[in-house]
Length: 353
Image 1 (cartoon, rainbow, N blue to C red):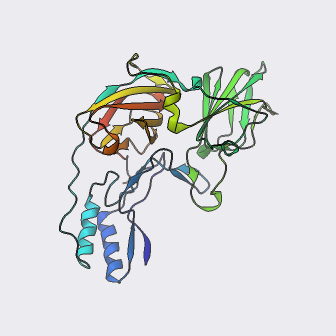
Image 2: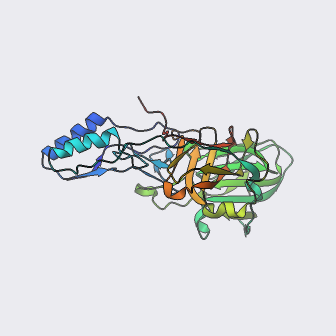
Image 3: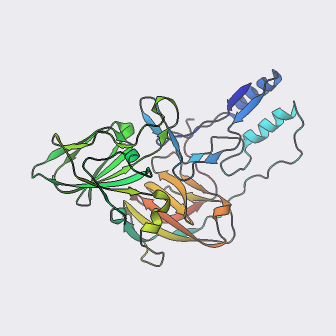
């Protein structure tokens, strides 16, 4: 019994898109069936880590998984047959009767374009700021968030170094709303230089996905063991958990406001209205964006990140209305091309070949 016949693999941010040889995968399946084995194909149908449901690997380096779980499967992320599907079907037909019908091949999808409007800074988001003597982990809060803002006052008049306990998983540092830098868990970052050390210090902390196997299962998220400035632990924090699913509802803005006409610095929310003739699958093209999240008609599709490999976000037809569709983008980094574009097919990035 082969309980997981890996015919592909998943991707993580900053790496290549994984594929496997159609011919070699089909030959391995043929060998198993010829031996009389039972086979469970993993994955038979690719999918999507919608929302913030992606997991992560960690074998010394933390590696969050991308939004797409296409997996180079016989049926792709949108359910379309691939060359691997037809090869597997031919192999299975040698050992068992297969249906006469096959799924239709994929067709190019519509490529509408629309502008983005009325940027709203995330640091101005509304909500209840709780008071904490020391910086809490995400898991100290109920419900447990995936994004959090934390702020405190610092009062020193000489340059310094801000040192963090373990970062899980991404922290952007602001002083009086001026961005000083971003630290990543996978880079083992733990400090940032502070040219000025007096004012309101704000941290934007993000959980990029939980390790989904092994000894790190269930580990807490956020910043472990607090933050210190020049060796002195910082205390007296105001903390705002952010519910990513409902974030657009807490931020004013309209597609009737001014359109963004040039590069955009985050963290900021922008809105667009995408018009299509019929309800159909779409692929949002994120190549000109930096890092963030996208909501389509109020549904959180997932994350995008310019480091790739993934370059599109899948929008299934049930989410798409004939006519006007609302798109909200949270850009956490920088957006070079602040326009909503669609691609005719998935663009999952470069391969190792």
